[in-house]
Image 1 (cartoon, protein in one colour):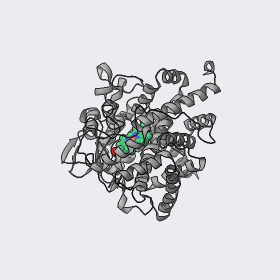
Image 2 (cartoon, rainbow, N blue to C red; image 1 turned 180 degrees about the horizontal axis):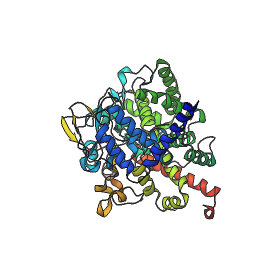
Image 3 (cartoon, helix red, strand yellow; image 1 turned 90 degrees about the horizontal axis):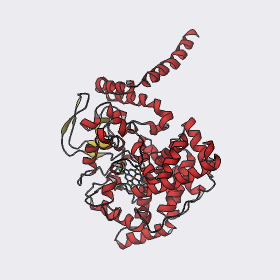
Image 4 (cartoon, helix red, strand yellow; image 1 turned 135 degrees about the vertical axis):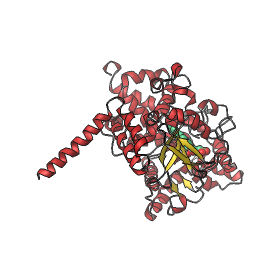
Length: 477
Ligand code: HEM
């Protein structure tokens, strides 16, 4: 009995002391560096110790993957990432025993994102070997997705060109923009309640269901010009939730069958709309299989664009809403002054969609030396990744006149070089040089949702602020 009590007291005290110490200025940085210096020979121990320290940020950034190591720029600063350009992350093929070299400075990430001949593994979807996934998760026509194709692949350009031709919502300045419409059955008060509750208790979802619902509804209204019903939104979320398990190696025959059924619900809805129909017709006229192209596009846009309870547009939107909810007095006037600049700065500093380009294939064998002095050989053919959020905090580009970390980590909408963020793969200023979102020599690879997601975040942010102001007239905030 006495022994149990001592154990319980230790269970409470040890984490409290551990996280308390990490809160002392400079200690977290020293901890990260020490782990990368002394524990680096044992990858599994190094990953666990690194993730453990991130847990203290849960209330600041949210739970689950929102607290993962790709969202904290200190992990780069602590090992001189902006100078060396590299850090180590778990290898997708052997996470417990191996590393992959991640690019983390602005220059090194840019080098990968702008490589016109960047190689991807067409069998690998994020961390999943698609050959080993049971039937139903990837329906006929879906593979390989855009994410799996080499940058110079003609098939990638042809598919992007088809999407760009039929979906006006992806353009920077479409002729018409759908007005905002609340998601079915969800009031702005429900949305505010969902965000506020999550600030206090950031579990069990990474993105509260109401935020996923509002984003999904608005996204499909713009991208496919259809208004989803509550049941269809539920099917979409379930589809991604079940699919997401494959990323952690938890696919099953039952999961595959469920995914196939759920995908069909959303596919039928989109096929009944103007954009879905146009996509199939245009595909057919370009010698492609219409229904399969629609299915492929729907998967790509749902997975990379909406994301459900994982990285995607819904998570990026949630990061915006958290910020507005946390400090309305400061952030509402800043948002209103320049909504586009505010949203861009949220994406630069907090990310939310894809963490970077991941994985790609190293073309040559190179030895990289970390800031800790640890040398790691990256062999030709092995996987590499990039972490845009760390590049977005590189003082060389975002550090102001004195190139400081402090300047780079300050939330400053409209800052110098704001359009040089690498979240959308290529810099915004280069994407704008292309005639459309298919891509061009100035920006050979970039996120298809670059412009759309910013527009959606502005619409949802404006709606949220209206709701907050109705609940609390300005003088009360
Ligand atoms: C703030 C939100 C978003 C961020 C930060 C983001 C970021 C990214 C990143 C880093 C990639 C590269 C992934 C890789 O190659 O491994 C990517 C690709 C992609 N994104 Fe986004 N994304 C966001 C939202 C969206 C939205 C709303 C859409 C919907 C249209 C979308 C559609 C795509 C597609 C289709 C690709 C594949 C492009 C290709 O490789 O050709 N994304 N995105």
